[in-house]
Image 1 (tube, rainbow, N blue to C red):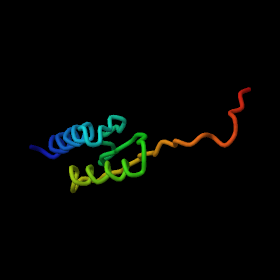
Image 2: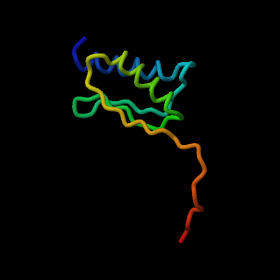
Image 3: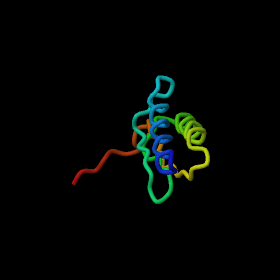
Length: 84
């Protein structure tokens, strides 16, 4: 396999692993941008984010990676929303 094909295969494998039952994370988008594998999305908790990054590092070892994974807030807002 050539470099780009191998990278695409590894990204597809990462998507499969994140969709498996243990983590079942379908909200993370994974693509190649500017020579980096980019993970983007919102996850349910800090431990979920840590687990996703651990799996990504294992699957993408040797590929440059950037992660923009935001943790969803489960707390109520401090004040009411103001509508104009």
